[in-house]
Length: 52
Image 1 (cartoon, rainbow, N blue to C red):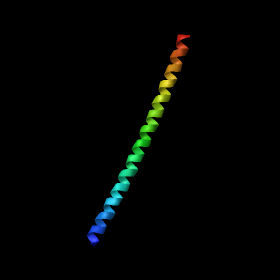
Image 2: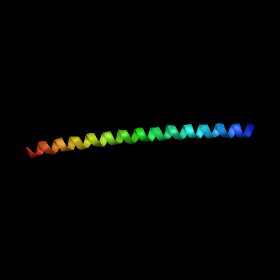
Image 3: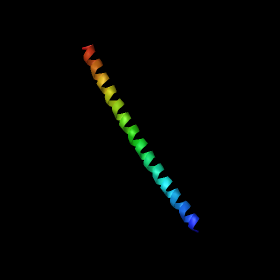
Image 4: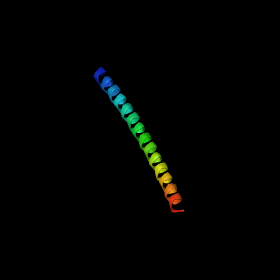
């Protein structure tokens, strides 16, 4: 029974670590998406300025 409890605790720890890593990766993707969107917007504005 002790081994089962220990195994369950290890599994819970791994699940928590996985959830944290997944959340961090998603946050990083959102930051990158926002950064690229802002860059694209700046490029579009610069392009419009060049046309004038």
